[in-house]
Length: 170
Length: 362
Image (cartoon, rainbow over all chains, first blue to last red):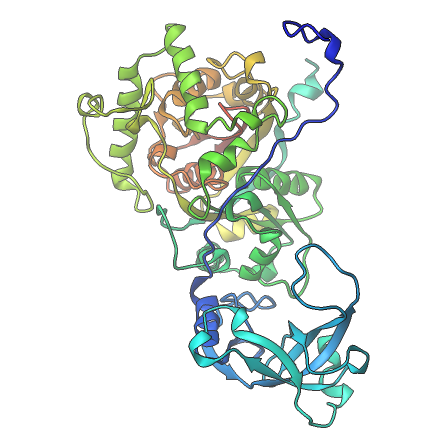
């Protein structure tokens, strides 16, 4: 038994656990607040660059290309095009969706930037680039200023978009 | 020290602070994100000298992701400048004063003629006391989560014990700084309160009373550096950087003499500060007692106006307060209020790392 008054027999310390946790308040800013408030009303709100005319969704308040404020609000369609996708087959900690599932970049009609969305109501092996999809929202009384208001996207039955219409957004 | 080494911080190629802009410093800007905070300041720093981003060859920024708790915030912050056509760009996880140093080194090499430097720091999204504890030695110190006020109080106590300062001195510095801040439109804390009244404050951590602490600030700042023809074209009275250096001391607080700042003294020596007198000094001393340590390390006598802007006691936007010191000093040279000035920036606990920038008019 080691003498509790000395540490000599205990050997060197080889590992050290120092738990760290920090909490933050997120400040979305003026432009991103408009996007989040739009979600609360069941619609996608973007902003247009006055210089190049591109529509960003969500906008962070500036055009990343031109560095100028985006001031014009643009309501976007509820439908868009899958520009690219990934089928998730690997389970991971905290996973809340049954595998396999589809994670896709969706280019909303009227937007010039795609964003990530979950695709449901279709077997994973039938997803394809160019597929037309529509957003499925939570019930109106469940809407919040969060992307959780969008349950997922699903095929809307339209013919696939022409590659030329989304090739710039890959 | 060899002649070459002693000249390392001196300017070979004249570079000027062509333009400086900062946001109005506030306790909490919960209306704007980082991009929205930066955009008007970037527009102002370019607009003041009639240029656009197309006129600079390099962009360097200073910030820390720990402050907003989001990864790669320095990448998204570039949205405030615009990235087309692409430009060489860099970032330091430090105060913007060190981003300015990087741009200055590149200008010394002669490959570029102008650079935009900007920095942003929000203290409000997180708990600054916890965040700053994480810059400490991760094995022996950080797990104790010592807050920056307590560490500064250890330093202030050591200063008093060494007979180098009194609590009255701290109050006098705070009183003077916030009175001077009355003429600084961007100051966060400005008032005319006699030192005697300040001494009635409660201790936050003895021997530091509330007045000896910096305010907690959200703020951003930007500078345009220019060399050669551009420096002349963009400013009628350029503030030339004649010396620039930064030095760091050990991370181990127990191994340092906290009552002096050897790294500041070394940086000042290498930047050629003692080559001539200075009219003003903009010193980044977040805690009142640190001004005493830094004035000694910089070798300044009582003819030098210390922190005419009010300094960090008037506004301490983390990651920006150092660059603002350089901007404030340069502004006073360009306006003719000063002929030669020194600006200082600090980083780390208890003045661990220090940067000295010497500026001159014509």
